[in-house]
Amino acid sequence: MYNLDIHHKKEGVLKLLALRVIMAVREILQVGDKTLKRVSKKVECIDDEIKGIIEDLKDTLYAGTGIGLAAPQIGYLKRIFIIDLRNGQEPIILINPKFLKRIGKEESQEGCLSYPGYEGIVIRPRRIAIKGLNEKGEEVTYEATDLLKDAFCHEYDHLDGIVYIDKAKKVYKVEQIE
Image 1 (tube, rainbow, N blue to C red):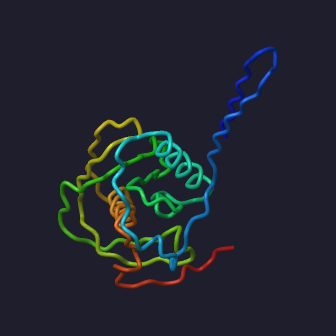
Image 2 (cartoon, rainbow, N blue to C red):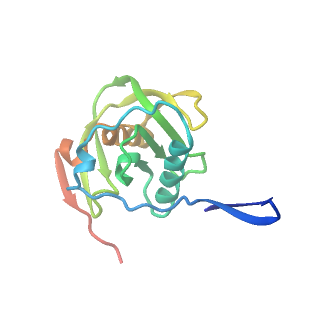
Image 3 (cartoon, rainbow, N blue to C red):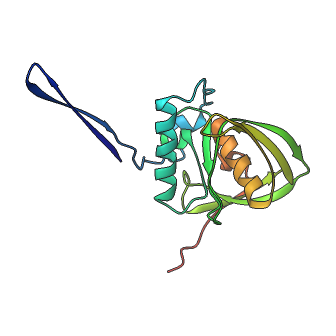
């Protein structure tokens, strides 16, 4: 949460202007919500609104145990997602992503914060190359395999209104371990 209080005097009267920019953990939309089926819009410029969405994505992702979250999952139809494999590396923020390469095919085991308690088997590429903008507006490119590749593909699908269960060969309930 950011809180900036600006004080100034005008004609001997102290006026308090408070600008409160609150970034928060947002509700993650669940399968069945029509927003998840809509195609997200391209980000035209990285302004305060977009920076706020990015902060909301971070706050919401880190409030749980997921490794990726796309803007549509928290109600924003913008082409932005965050991935953090929680392996000590910096999180990846990607704005307006585009695949450059998708090579081969393999099965991927996936879950989704929008469909908790379930996992599924999805056919994904073996390797990908993807580009987009980082949160500073700089163009970045990633080549990925394994879990990072699956996360890129999964979050990208959310931007096109696709949930992994739409593509899954099989979906099954995950047993709770107590």
